[in-house]
Length: 386
Image (cartoon, rainbow, N blue to C red; front, side):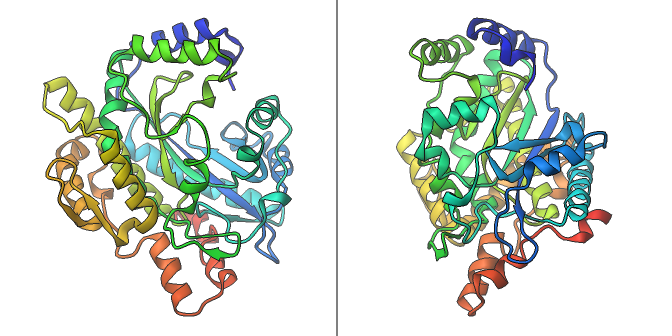
């Protein structure tokens, strides 16, 4: 956490506004959360502090952070000026983290949930930030053993950042459907493609798809209200699936499950990035954009949680249901001109079978959760580019 965390709420908001007003369009950063696994049992193991200490003095030191529990580790690309830089850094960070984990005798899992490790056995890391969250949320935060994939896209202009967040809202279920990787938790086949979303997004306050705000002053007023009523103690306690970040001049997309495969991680990032840029351009040009009622977005949100790529998504303009794959292919076609401009087009793809679909198919073929999960760990080939 940077100096902005020591500012008062008013100073944080002023800092964020100034950062957005002088920001740069379409920079990019990716954050990936991984499970730390015992190599013998593949169960979660509380080894984050050991990995963090071992990273000091290495290239990974500034890019490895804790994320709630001691059996989880997050790596960040840092700010990238081009998509090609970001794609290379996703590979690089995974290789660096794999090598660190290997030296210390642990493995890394990369699905949105762990299939069997009990939440009761996970220890919250001892930092002021997570102690505050523990005190505030109690069972909600204890239960949240989940692993996500976050994308930050630079947007210049505070009002414009809010409008881009608003415009992204109808597309969040599309990104979730593409990312689903978590059908198993607590030794159960949940029947969901994203149990992570049900655990995290449905339990945390100020989470899921936010209301539209329209302008920076409207958003600022709401954040002031949260601080004034002691509803939040830090701006990061606004956990929505898309949010303007108050420490960086970025729109942060937080809807996605963690990705076992690095190529699929980069492809998912490409769609999130190109979509954000496409919407920003549309807003600049006065192009009409969909603004469906929240209840309609909610229907697609549930469909993505339940069925991922295997089900249907609703076209929120025609209200017709079409296969999720066809829906995503149409979205990729819509963003393609801007994707080509920002260097992400070659990475846009809908997989023949997504991570959740692959795991469910193996389960239906009779594989055990252990047999399935061993196929989802980050592999040694990440060291040579994935």
